[in-house]
Image (cartoon, rainbow, N blue to C red):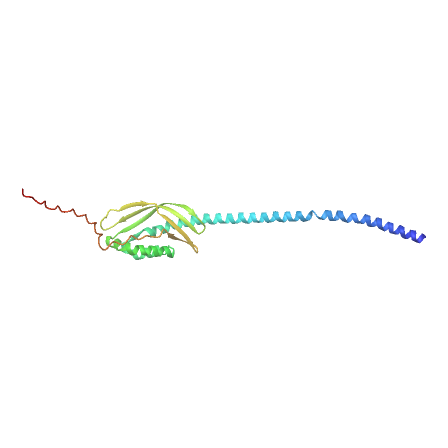
Length: 219
């Protein structure tokens, strides 16, 4: 009997110990559970900050590249515009070759096509043109393409006009970066339309109807 009572008491003590130990595990689990959403929230915040930092770095790099492009293209346009717009009938081959070396291939082809038509008149009139760049400015810019507007003064003489003729204009040059150089890429030169071989006939004037003679009747 004593053994049975002792075993029952032992069982009751074990049950009470199990009841005391079970609640002790639940708070531990409850204490660990808020950490998971906090870590997820912290990870999202870090990701957003990383994306923002990357965007700001990229934007700052782009702005610096555009600023360098504006300065470099403007300086190149100011130098290359002189070769583009200046020429001498005595050294025309050298002048055109030097100007083409400062152009993109497409612009050089357009420039050559233009001069193939324009050259005979320059040589016949013995024209010399000297261009002075007065003012330059940038109207549009990207890291690889820049549009530059220039105020130029062109002084020209020829066989018929010994006194210098002065013309001013505001040309726009499209500059393109090829490798490390800024080259002229536009505007492409346009050629005048070919002259007609025979004059266009004037429209014929309508003929007036001839008056028919009146028949005279004898009384």
